[in-house]
Every structure is written in C-alpha cells, then in structure tokens.
Length: 266
Image (cartoon, rainbow, N blue to C red; front, side, top):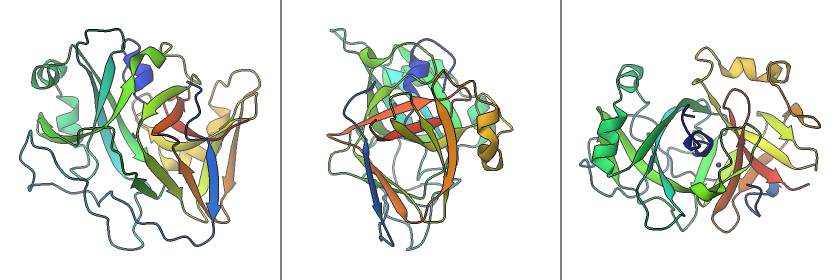
C-alpha cells in the first residue's frame, strides 16, 4: 500500500469495514475452478485507453500463486462526500517491471485519469491459486499505460469506509470474486477477538522489499498484533473458496501491508 493519506488504507485489493462481505467459508474437495486471470506477459492486443474484456483463463492446472503484481489507486473529484477510489492492476498485462515502477510519476497518473489523488500499492505477490470474477465487475476494465506499465481498472473502493492507515482495520472493496486456495497449500490467517477469520490473499514488498513467501510461516513472530488477535498457519486438506457477498469484500492489512480477506464471521 501507499504511504500517504487514508488512501493507504484503501490499497488492499485485489486487488479492502466490517460489513457483510466475503465471509463465506466454502470448502470443496477436488473442485475444478477456472480463472479469468491469464499467465503474465506483455499484452499487445489492447490499445491504451480502450476498454478491455476480462482476460481468458489460463491452461488447466495453472495457478497464480506467487504471481507478482502492482496497483495504483486514483481518486477523482466528486460533487458529494462519497468519493471513490478506482483500482488499476497489472494482472494479465505484465509483471510490473521494477525499473518502470520505481520511475512512476503519480502526477502523470493524475493527468491521465483526471484524478485529484493517486497512490501506489505494491509490488505484491498472490498467495492463492485461482481468481474467478463474478458477473458484475466493479471496475471499468479500461486499460491505461502509466510510464510503460499497462494497468486495467478492476475495482472501486468507497473512501467513507476508510479509517486512516491503521493496520487490522477492516475496509470494504467493491468487487465480485471467488478466491480459491488449492488443497495442500499453506494458508496464513488472522483471527480477531470476535472470532472472525481473515485469510492472506497477497504479501507485500512495499514495507519490506526482501519479504518472500518463505518468510510467511514465521510472520507471527514479526507482527505487532493487537490484543486478542492471533496469527496461524495451516495446510489445507481440500480446496478452499473464499467468496464476496453482494459484490463486497472485507479486507484488512497487517503491519507489513500484507492483505487478508474475511472468510468467516465470528
């Protein structure tokens, strides 16, 4: 997530208040679920500024586990107080080249999008296997080129739901998705004092550039968990599907800006 203003709390997608969202824990052994997220690679078929359809699924058996991606969040002026942040994501377009990411000019991003504010979120890596979008996509799917990095509009976040940058604060993200974690996969979960469980969806390298997936099992020793919170690691016996409800996901971040989606209410 980014380091400025409450937009930092919004950078929890993918791509972020305790609402009735994403709290369904569905396990199905051996389920076969395809994804609308392709393998990474340059996309030369979509002109910049156009609206791109959802990308095709990858070959059977593929996974996005470990896939690197970046996001930019933009806020456009609004006549009312319910400003919305639009989430731009590199998935399916490129792997967010570090050199171009380091040189990203947020003033250029604001000029291209008409936004009054812009924030970066990433690099990140997925720790899930498949993403299936629902029938309603919250983003426009428009593709833009920011400093040579193509990004697609995939989601929206309502700013009034934000409560500053504090970690472990739930935020609502408008997207319609099913996240699948494959059987045999290690998963990393936070349990709140009320018993609500959130599962890690991506780890960040924005606070700690050296963090890797191998560090996640011992993450509990590094986090400054609030009183009553716990961090656990377990290995799945079956596929686990974590779904949004009514187009909303409830997401939180930890001290290192790793992101978790609510999967079970307390």
